[in-house]
Length: 198
Image 1 (tube, rainbow, N blue to C red):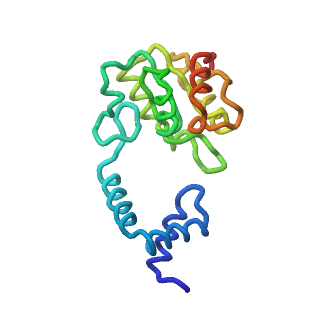
Image 2: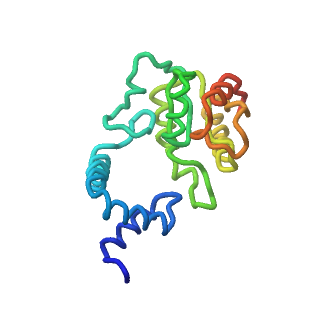
Image 3: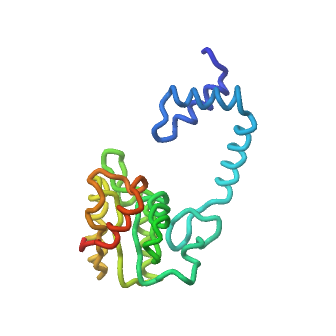
């Protein structure tokens, strides 16, 4: 072993992040310990605070430091509309456009059999509880235009139909294989404005 166990453990912890391989994890570890221990301490403190204080909004399932997030608590939002997204990053992308003023539900993932993620691993029960407590007139399924996103949308469409809800999907202005998080505002605005039946 060329490094101490603590250094190795830190690098292994970084490797748990999506897209971080052994070399990147090693680079992060060495940079923080060799050149920027103040930043390392700040990351550790901030991460610890987030773990202790951030949970899920009881209505939309997004991350929140209070029982109800600021979007769900806002009286200016249109409570008759619900947009279902995969991740908090997707929600943020839509909020940045300013085109949508309804409420959201964050699944915290998508159906992906190859990764062992099924409907039970998503916030489906929480979604149904939200709809039971807060009925809506329009549901927009805004999953990514990927195989997994389409499978998730199809599952949601069928499940919602069984409970008497008709859903729309975003128009195919989004490129196939594209991730909502990385779309430009113009593409997102057009996709929202031209949404189609699911």
